[in-house]
Amino acid sequence: MVVDIMHMRLGRKTGPKPKFTAEQVIDAVLRIGLDKFTMSQVARAVGVGAPSLYRLYNSRDDLVAACLEEIARRRPWVSPQVPWPDMLREWSRYCWELCEAFPGFALTLYTYPFPQVNFMKSVPSIVEDFTAAGLSKDIVLFALDFIGDTAITIHLGVSAYRAGPDDHERRDLIQRNLEISNQQLDTDLSALLYSPDIYRDLVEPKIEFIIAALQAGIRPPAHGFGQLT
Image (tube, rainbow, N blue to C red; front, side):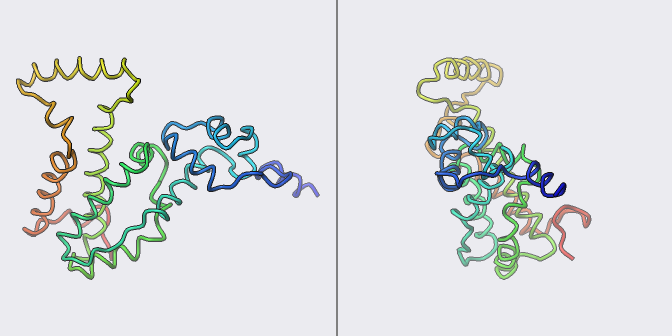
């Protein structure tokens, strides 16, 4: 009896079945932004009180994990069946598009502990896709991580220069600091920051450099991240 009572206290709240679904909750989080939502905001979005959410999720972090798993389910990696250099280009684009599709995704990847565990189910098949395309097995995870990080961190940086249509204070700050930076660097960064194709202008050159290095036979140290044995 004591064990049962302790379990009830530590686990999710008991009571009547919630009148909303996990999908509705996750949809609300993804609309608000994975990096900035509060449980109260989500509850209002689905029309319930905040305590009701804890019948499905033990904490905000628990809900973030559920959202990451749902993102992996909704936008799975699909192999383009091309040679590994082209496949790495597609991997970069895939990572970028995840960040574009789900506001706050990039920041969450760098603030939530071990977010990759929510994508682990697909890792073996992804690795197999790349090794089948000719990428050396001993560096496949390193290459995926390196290129994914490049695309995601650039997106994270660019996001700092984006402001909502009603966020006039933020827009003024961006413009003011842009003008100062242009003077300091004796150049105009506007073309890059406000490019109609930021991925092409900011991400692709770095990805091409990484791929060229791999094609030239440059390899990470044997003890580097992602080595497969």
